[in-house]
Length: 463
Image (cartoon, rainbow, N blue to C red):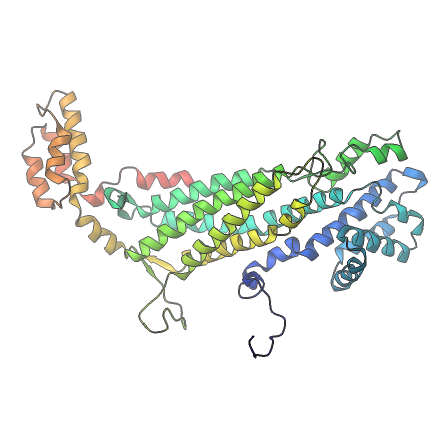
């Protein structure tokens, strides 16, 4: 056993330590405190909904009373967090602790007469499903999506800036038909935009139908109320979507869909991180030195691509967590088990690693500079990539009756496969081809840097 003295309490997760500043915005929603604040909100708004309809002999609250009651969640802070922790230590039930807090606040406001409307006919999952829908929606729409949008915007800006910067492509890692750096970055922006729209169009569902989704207790208390319609109006009034047909729990399918889409976006971002890392290694991008920064503890010259490496690793962690969330939450034994309870407590961790990756990518994209001279030198060393253009033009000439060549592909394969061919050698080959003069002149004017097709124009598809 170590004889070292114990450290003061320390955060176990780097998200709460080293990287706290980058992910702090999620804590307002996806922390335990954020969840409890949302639970209080749901409980309070349910009381207001019931009293607004004068159910069970209650009367609508005045505007002043509603404001005072809503202040319980709007001003939710350290005192409420401490009170809930103290109460839960006794109840051993987090939602029951929230109910007791709301009851105490009702008493403090002189509203004891309606205290039994706190948590009325609710099962914990009614409160939890609404609270998770609220907190996840607010975290995604208010924190995570804006950061994804910032990365898409940064990519789109770079795509436009470098739309005309020719670069040698590499398919299977080998020299291939040139593109432009702008078009290649635009592909990532295009892919991410599509997934972002899918996420923005997603649902955030909650149930509010009692112990096994049947409104049994509700009907026992008041059979003349259209409880499904009242529940729908309540949930939709919170700004989330209603699931009418459930067991004791909301089925979590919306979460599965969301986490799969966020994981999909993470896969695209991972692809971006590894490609940019590779372009840096090839010298296509130079890294802009940051004043005071150190790249290596022993090699002073180094600037390491740490933004993209950090993003890559955190996207892998996030992807693993989102996969686990989706695969676990899709199943619940019969009417209810508690596997979802522990699982959902890690939603914030998954989004935290994803947000950290987005933050690094956004920063990293501002810390690179395109080395156009390196791109041009790379192109000039690989004239053989024009073999595609030559054999395609010859094919067209054969169809047009202007050439008697029998197998243009094989002809170019013999010339170029597995070997470097310089510009002069390729020009000499073209001059000797049996094709029309116009086609020959087009090929002689072609260079690797000029063989980029519509790459420049395709960037306009980004809007």
